[in-house]
Length: 347
Image (cartoon, rainbow, N blue to C red):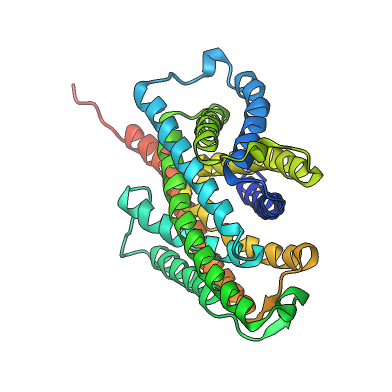
């Protein structure tokens, strides 16, 4: 049961991530700006994490803060801020289904960065390593299929059927811009996961790391809003949709989904967390069609199937490596005991 907890936690986190995507898209559609939305969401998260962090990580067991750890908090906050801003900007141009599909490029970028930073090792003698590598490539290929191949409509939207050819050209341009922003968001998210893994190795108090991360985002989003958003209604919460979206994002975004992800990064490593992003595509497709009126196309279905195949390949390789580590760790104490038993002391 303990070994299954990270899998269950990441499955729940992906459900929350899809809901976060839909909530952000709805809030932006009401005219709310990205910076003010990010500010409110992370400010609410800070209010939740502050008492929880210092209640769970009490003083005697709390890791010691150093300048390098504080610097890591700052870098993590900057990456998180850029990831959220770019991501919400991309959501405005593409459907929730396509946004979630492109985010599935995160495992590929994370795998490459994990190898570069020494968090994943490539041992040519292990089949599990090749399965993880091939599975990552397959998953990225599936995300590219969803991005660049639409195909015939399985479920059409009344919106797309009612627009004129001129508007369709504008829709295509927005689609390309939105796809580019989501690709950039995937790269930033991969750097965020790797940075998170490095920091948690130095400072293991997950909730304090998340509180510091959200605090940096609150400051950056507030300053950016003052400089770039000249509309005095940018911080307005008159719309009920905005309030509900902020409540969901603040409680189930960084407060729940990102914290679960950080705990799983600490337990299982960055690639494990990144490879759960493909599961969100199925949930996003269903919720996008039901609640947002998004269309469902053949390219999305084919790409999703390819993504899932790659995902399970990586998970299989990861499980084989975990079993090997467990066997080696269980054997080492026995070998040490046997060596001590057979040691002869010569006077």
